Length: 588
Image (cartoon, rainbow, N blue to C red; front, top):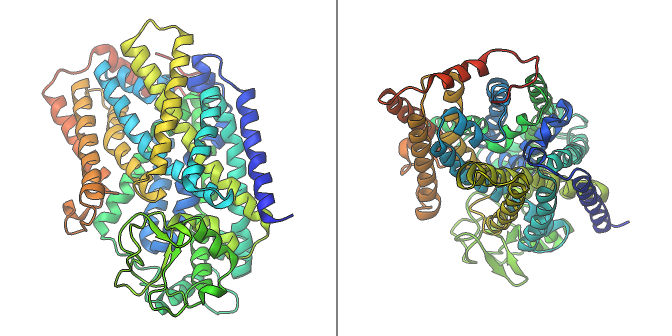
C-alpha cells in the first residue's frame, strides 16, 4: 500500500474516532459543557491536560525552532516545561478548590466585581485567539502536505472538525477526545524519534541518542551539528545570538504565561476533588515530559538529516520529499547563480515576507517577493515542517509518515478545541449569564455557548489563514499576554488577602495593554526594528515578563490607596488556602 493511501486511512480513522467520541459524550447540561460535570478521573484528566498543553507549537514547531536556532531555541523548552510545574504545583489545587467554571469566574468572584470579570473575559479572548492562530496554522501545514490541499483549504477542514466536536460535546466531549488525541500524538512523536535515533546513533532511546556518537563519524551529535553548520557558514549550534536579558525575559514570560493560560487552568476544574486535581497535575507532568525530553533529540536529528541531504546537491537529484514539500509551499529554492546546485547558508534567501510565487504556483508561505537578497543562500525551509518532514528525510516507512500526520493534527486540534471552549464559555457564562442576561435559562445559556464557539471557530480560521508568524512564535505571544494579565491577578487573588478589585482591574488593564501594544508595534508597525530598538533589549516574545512586572506594581500601588476587600472575601481566601485536599471541593 502506498504512503498516500496509508495517510488517508490513518488520518481518516483518527478523525472518525474523534467524532464518535464527541457523539458518545455530547453535553446535555451547562455543567457537562463547562467542566464535564467535575467527574473526570485523574489519569484521564492528566492525559487530556497533556493533549491540551502539547499544542501544535510543542508537537510541530518547538523541535523545528530548536533545530534552526540551536541554543536560542531552548528558551521555549525551558519556559514551557517550568511553567507547567509552576501551574500544577502552586496554583491548580487552589483554583480547583475555589470550585468555579472559568478563570473569569474566579476573577469576578475573588475580586467581587463584574468589571473585573469583564476585564478577565477580554484577556481570555485576546490570549485565546492569539494562541489558536498558531494551532490553526499547524492544522493547515499538516493538511497541505499530507492531504495534498492548500494550507488555507487545510485550515477550513480543520475548522469544520473542531467545530463539530467542540460545539457538540463541550468540555465533556473535548476531554475524552483529548485522551484519544494524546495517545495518537505521543505514539506519532516517539515512533519516528526512536527509529531515527537508531539510524543516526544506534541507540533506540532518543534522549540517550542525543548524547551519543553519530554512527561512523566518531563525533557526538552536537559535534556533528557544529561541524556541518560550520561547513555551510552557520554559527555553532551551541552558540546563542540572544542576549542574556532577552533569554531570561522570554523564558520567564513563557513560564508565568503558562500559569495564566485559561484553557489549561480550566482542566483542573473537571476533577471530582482537590486531591484528584493534584493527582491529575502529576500525571499530566509525566505525560508531557515524555515529549518534552525527546524534543531536543528530534531537533538535532532533523537538523543533521537536513544538512546532510540537501546543501550542495543538484536540484534535479533531490529526493521526492523535497519536491513534495516545495509543492506544499513550505520549502522554496531559487537558483541565484544558475548552477543548478542548492546553496544553503546564513541569511534570507528571498526579500520580504510572506509569499513567493514561482512557476509552479505559490511557494514559501511567508516570502513577499521573488527578489533575491544579497545573501548567497538559495534555500527557504519553513521551521514548522522539521518534525513532520523528518521521517521522510530519513527514509522511514510510509506507515510511520502516516502516523506523524495524524499526530500533528491531533496536537493542533486538541489545543484548538480547548481554546475555543474557553472563548465560548467566557462569552456565554461570564458575559451573558453573569452580566447581560442573568435570568437566561440553562438551555439558552448552552445554546449561546455553542453559537459563541461557532463564531470563534470562524475567527480562529481567519487567524490560521493569515498568521502573524511561525507557530511557536505566535504561541509565545499568547504566553506573553497571559503572563502580563492573568498571572498576577491569580497569584495575588490566592495569596494576598489585601489585594482588592481596584488593584486587580488596573493591573490587568495595564499589563495587557502594554504587552499587546509592544507586540503589535514591533511585529506589525515596525517589523524591521532590532534589538537596539527594543526596550532594554527585550524582544516581543519576552515582553510579557515586563508587562507582568507592570501589572504587579500597578496592582500593589492602586491597592494601597483604595479600600481593602470585604471581610467575607478575606475569609474566602483563607478557606481556599487551608489544606483540606483529601475531601471534595467546596463550591462558593
